[in-house]
Image 1 (spheres, one colour):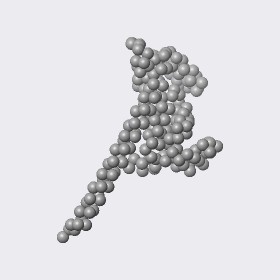
Image 2 (cartoon, one colour):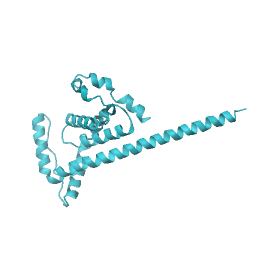
Image 3 (tube, rainbow, N blue to C red):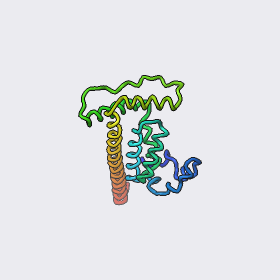
Image 4 (cartoon, helix red, strand yellow):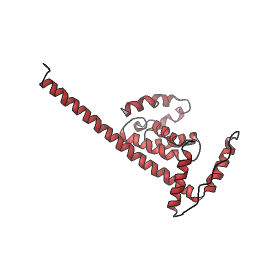
Length: 194
């Protein structure tokens, strides 16, 4: 069920190979795990996307990181890029707060809060936005700089095992449904209705 949905939503291998920006890298895109929807490739794609989503920067940076991780680890490439979207303007503040707290825990620090990011960015160019964001990251200090990779690793590990577990449960459920249908069919053949 999930596999059919993912096949419908994700771009096809042929579309990616013929895309004008990606075609020059097509020799790296031939491994079958990059495109197949099986348990390990999907779980690995989710893990790569969760890790890449915590990389500071905008969506193109995270998409690129997700793609590079997907290619490097030979996991589902479209999924490793798509999953990076969990890190967006609505979720970034709680994620960075969690990373800050995780960094404090790793450094055995108490107290201290994450500096606020109340700078108006309307009308500013990318270079201005980037310098403001980098200044904010450095003002948050060691807890955030240590907490971001820790949270990225933690999310990737949890994402991999939850996806793997959910996939296994889905397969077991389908097997049970098939077995029940087979038992009903055998029962109907032995005892036809009058």
